[in-house]
Image (cartoon, rainbow over all chains, first blue to last red; front, side, top):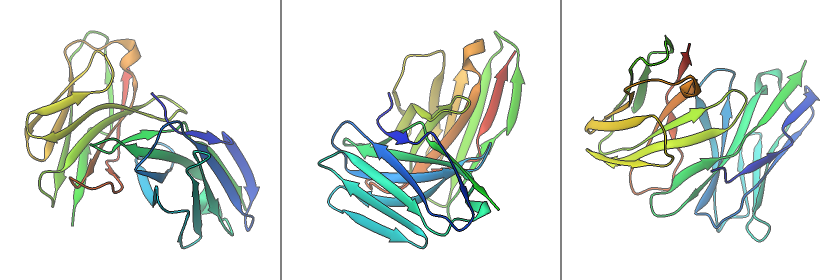
Length: 111
Length: 113
């Protein structure tokens, strides 16, 4: 079953703009992760934020986590055409830390 | 360095035929292994995971099975494919006893006709 739900389902922006994607989940988690998928390819791990963290940065990526609201956001600053992809949040919980994915946000960055 | 291999990249199979997809990991020992399926334009659904040789946990009832005959080999199988088995199948691994990120293979696109 799905745990994370991304919002919006699709996002279209111009190069240089910032892109914000949101994720909500239902149960307690150990950590939350964001992945990127180029069309027809495997997923690439972008960033992981633990349940006791509130914000994390990696290059042009900024992730926030609000465990009281069971939500997270991914911000991509100064977007580039190469950022065009689908972005998925995934929650890790339980003893085996299984990852449960949301349906994803399709981001299109136009030159 | 660790790498994950998944093949074939694409596969077209008739209904009722058997299936065997293979995934191997290099450069690590005792990885946690996972099989996911992705329907077109959708998120990933966890099918199976394994924390050791011969240890398979199934997440959803289905027409598929998984096996782990060796430490770094994970196989997804079916005796008789259904049309509904079509999809994009992804194998992934993670170091054991960690809550870290997964590394995914490049996926197999299966079309059952």
